[in-house]
Length: 415
Ligand code: SF4
Image 1 (cartoon, rainbow, N blue to C red):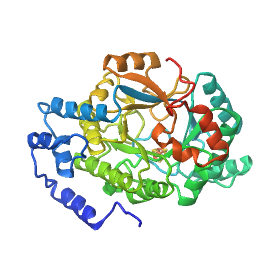
Image 2: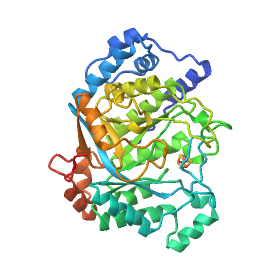
Image 3: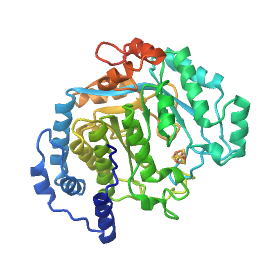
Image 4: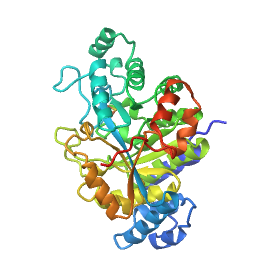
C-alpha cells in the first residue's frame, strides 16, 4: 500500500486554516500542556496550541520536551564529524534565502574536480572525520549549457551520475562515509546512491505550497514543490533508506505550517520507519540574498518549534545546528534536541558561511554543562545501521570498519 501525505482531509484542513487565518485549535496552551503524556505523540491541535504558547508557558513546554528527549536517548547528545563537499554550487532553483547557489560565470561559481573532492576527504580523514557531506545544487545541467559542458568534460551524463561516481571514489579511497544531499531524486536514483552511501537527505522545508507564489521564498524554485519533495522521502521509505529531512523556519510559513510539516514527516515515518533524523533549521538573514530584509525567526520561535518537534516525534532523532543559534545554542538542548548535526573541524558551513561552527571543545563543554555527554556518531544513526549492513559489498565493509559495537564512530576523538 502506498501512503500519501496529502490525503484529502489534510489538504482541506491546511487550506481551511490558511483561508481563515485562524486555525481550528480546540485547546489552550495551558490545557495542551496537560495533554502531554510520556511516550505518546501529541495531536495536531495540541501541537498548534503549544507552538503558539506564551513566554509564561514556555519553560513548562521546554521541560516536557527535555523529559521526552531523556526518555528517548538519556544523557547523550550526538554529532557527526564531517567534511563538507560542495560538489557544485550551480543550481537551477532560485530560493530567496540561498547564499550557496551561483549562476555560471558568477564570482565563486564552481564545480569540484575529482582531485579536489579527494583532497578534502583525505584532509578530513586525518582530522578524524567520518562523514563526507555532499551538498550541491539541484540539476543545474537542465538550465545551464555550461554545466552540460563541464559534465561532458568530466565524462558524466548528469550531475547525479557525477555525484554517484564521487561518492564511490570517497568510499573506495578513504574511510569516510558519503551522505549526499542532491535535491529531488527518483526512486531509481535513490537506489543507485544507496549503493555508495549509507544514508542521504532532503530537507522537506515546508508543506506550504503557497511559498512558490511570485515574490515568496520559493518563487522560481521548481524543485521546492512540497508534493515532489514528499514523494522523494516516500520513495526512500519504500527502499528502507535511512533518511534525513527537516523543516526550515522563518521563510514565510506560519506556526501551523510548521506543525503540518512535522506531521507530514511523522506520517511517512510511521508508515516506513526510515526517517533517521529531523532537522529544525532557522532562516538567517545574509547580505545579497533576495530575502536580505526579511525578519529572522526569533530564538523563542526556534525553541518552540524544536520542543513541538520533540513532542510530535518522541522517538525520532531531532537535530538543530548550533551555529545558527549562536551564542545561545545550548538552550536548544533544553528544547529536546538530541543531535547537533554535522560539525566540521576543517571546512566552513558553505550554506551559512557567515556563521562558523563552534569549536568542538566548546561544544563538548557547553553540552556537558547541560548534563549531557557529547558523542560522535556516523552519518547513519546506530539504530539504522543493521539495515545498511544488510546491503553488503564495499559499503557494508566500510561501514563495519567505521562503527564500534554500539554503532557509533569507532575512531571517535576527543574534541
Ligand atoms: S537552497 Fe538548494 S535548491 Fe534552493 S537555490 Fe540554494 S542550492 Fe538551489
